[in-house]
Length: 143
Image (tube, rainbow, N blue to C red; front, side):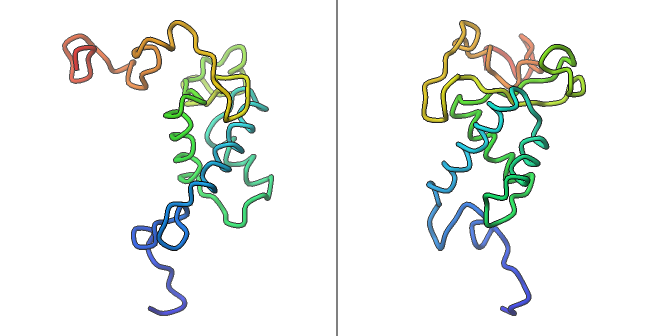
Protein backbone atom coordinates (compact mmCIF):
# COMPACT_ATOMS: atom_id res chain seq x y z
CA UNK A 1 0.00 0.00 0.00
CA UNK A 2 1.24 3.44 -0.84
CA UNK A 3 2.27 5.66 2.07
CA UNK A 4 -0.03 8.44 0.89
CA UNK A 5 -3.13 6.26 1.20
CA UNK A 6 -4.87 5.80 4.52
CA UNK A 7 -6.45 2.37 5.08
CA UNK A 8 -10.20 2.15 5.53
CA UNK A 9 -11.56 2.11 9.10
CA UNK A 10 -13.27 -1.20 8.24
CA UNK A 11 -9.80 -2.73 7.87
CA UNK A 12 -8.02 -1.01 10.77
CA UNK A 13 -10.94 -0.95 13.21
CA UNK A 14 -11.07 2.83 13.28
CA UNK A 15 -10.33 5.18 16.17
CA UNK A 16 -11.39 2.67 18.82
CA UNK A 17 -8.71 0.08 18.06
CA UNK A 18 -5.01 -0.06 18.83
CA UNK A 19 -3.25 -2.67 16.74
CA UNK A 20 -5.80 -5.52 16.79
CA UNK A 21 -7.66 -4.91 20.05
CA UNK A 22 -10.42 -2.61 21.24
CA UNK A 23 -8.98 0.25 23.31
CA UNK A 24 -11.48 0.14 26.19
CA UNK A 25 -9.37 2.41 28.40
CA UNK A 26 -9.41 5.17 25.78
CA UNK A 27 -13.16 4.70 25.25
CA UNK A 28 -13.83 4.93 29.01
CA UNK A 29 -11.75 8.13 29.27
CA UNK A 30 -13.73 9.64 26.37
CA UNK A 31 -17.02 8.62 28.00
CA UNK A 32 -15.92 10.23 31.26
CA UNK A 33 -14.93 13.47 29.48
CA UNK A 34 -18.21 13.62 27.55
CA UNK A 35 -20.19 13.03 30.75
CA UNK A 36 -18.30 15.86 32.49
CA UNK A 37 -18.89 18.25 29.59
CA UNK A 38 -22.62 17.50 29.59
CA UNK A 39 -22.81 17.79 33.37
CA UNK A 40 -21.10 21.19 33.20
CA UNK A 41 -23.40 22.44 30.43
CA UNK A 42 -26.57 20.88 31.98
CA UNK A 43 -28.13 20.21 28.54
CA UNK A 44 -26.33 20.24 25.21
CA UNK A 45 -26.46 19.01 21.65
CA UNK A 46 -24.11 16.61 19.91
CA UNK A 47 -22.47 19.56 18.19
CA UNK A 48 -22.00 21.31 21.55
CA UNK A 49 -20.22 18.29 23.00
CA UNK A 50 -18.03 17.88 19.90
CA UNK A 51 -17.07 21.59 20.00
CA UNK A 52 -16.29 21.45 23.73
CA UNK A 53 -14.07 18.41 23.22
CA UNK A 54 -12.31 20.06 20.27
CA UNK A 55 -11.65 23.24 22.30
CA UNK A 56 -10.21 21.23 25.20
CA UNK A 57 -7.26 20.02 23.03
CA UNK A 58 -6.88 16.93 25.23
CA UNK A 59 -6.88 14.33 22.45
CA UNK A 60 -4.01 13.45 20.14
CA UNK A 61 -6.40 12.55 17.32
CA UNK A 62 -9.24 14.70 16.07
CA UNK A 63 -12.61 13.19 16.89
CA UNK A 64 -15.23 13.45 14.20
CA UNK A 65 -18.89 14.13 14.93
CA UNK A 66 -19.54 10.44 14.23
CA UNK A 67 -16.99 9.40 16.89
CA UNK A 68 -18.64 11.66 19.46
CA UNK A 69 -22.06 10.30 18.48
CA UNK A 70 -20.82 6.74 19.06
CA UNK A 71 -19.59 7.72 22.53
CA UNK A 72 -22.93 9.38 23.27
CA UNK A 73 -24.82 6.25 22.20
CA UNK A 74 -22.66 4.24 24.59
CA UNK A 75 -23.42 6.69 27.44
CA UNK A 76 -27.16 6.41 26.71
CA UNK A 77 -26.94 2.60 26.73
CA UNK A 78 -24.94 2.78 30.00
CA UNK A 79 -27.81 4.83 31.48
CA UNK A 80 -25.46 7.72 32.28
CA UNK A 81 -27.00 10.22 29.85
CA UNK A 82 -30.44 10.53 28.35
CA UNK A 83 -31.25 11.76 24.87
CA UNK A 84 -34.21 14.15 24.83
CA UNK A 85 -35.78 16.62 22.43
CA UNK A 86 -35.64 20.31 23.17
CA UNK A 87 -38.84 22.08 24.14
CA UNK A 88 -37.25 25.49 23.62
CA UNK A 89 -38.15 26.58 27.17
CA UNK A 90 -36.47 26.42 30.57
CA UNK A 91 -33.14 24.62 30.43
CA UNK A 92 -33.66 24.11 26.67
CA UNK A 93 -34.06 27.84 25.95
CA UNK A 94 -30.77 28.07 24.00
CA UNK A 95 -31.58 25.01 21.85
CA UNK A 96 -33.98 24.95 18.90
CA UNK A 97 -37.34 23.25 19.52
CA UNK A 98 -37.27 19.57 18.53
CA UNK A 99 -33.46 19.34 18.37
CA UNK A 100 -31.96 16.23 19.97
CA UNK A 101 -30.04 17.02 23.17
CA UNK A 102 -28.23 15.15 25.90
CA UNK A 103 -28.69 15.51 29.64
CA UNK A 104 -26.97 13.72 32.55
CA UNK A 105 -29.09 11.31 34.55
CA UNK A 106 -26.98 11.02 37.70
CA UNK A 107 -25.38 13.70 39.84
CA UNK A 108 -22.07 11.92 40.30
CA UNK A 109 -19.24 11.17 37.84
CA UNK A 110 -19.31 8.51 35.19
CA UNK A 111 -18.59 5.74 37.70
CA UNK A 112 -21.41 6.79 40.05
CA UNK A 113 -24.85 5.27 40.19
CA UNK A 114 -27.51 7.38 38.47
CA UNK A 115 -30.69 8.23 40.31
CA UNK A 116 -33.72 7.11 38.36
CA UNK A 117 -37.20 8.51 38.60
CA UNK A 118 -40.30 6.34 38.51
CA UNK A 119 -40.88 6.95 34.79
CA UNK A 120 -37.28 6.02 33.94
CA UNK A 121 -37.72 2.65 35.61
CA UNK A 122 -40.55 1.80 33.18
CA UNK A 123 -39.16 0.64 29.81
CA UNK A 124 -41.45 2.96 27.82
CA UNK A 125 -40.20 5.94 29.85
CA UNK A 126 -36.69 5.68 28.43
CA UNK A 127 -37.43 4.15 25.01
CA UNK A 128 -35.98 6.27 22.18
CA UNK A 129 -38.80 5.08 19.88
CA UNK A 130 -41.71 6.13 22.13
CA UNK A 131 -42.79 8.85 19.69
CA UNK A 132 -43.25 6.22 16.94
CA UNK A 133 -44.93 3.65 19.20
CA UNK A 134 -48.59 2.81 18.60
CA UNK A 135 -50.71 -0.10 19.87
CA UNK A 136 -51.06 -1.76 16.44
CA UNK A 137 -47.91 -0.40 14.74
CA UNK A 138 -44.60 -1.97 13.86
CA UNK A 139 -43.20 -0.46 17.04
CA UNK A 140 -45.65 -1.28 19.81
CA UNK A 141 -45.73 -2.20 23.50
CA UNK A 142 -46.40 -5.79 22.41
CA UNK A 143 -43.35 -6.02 20.14
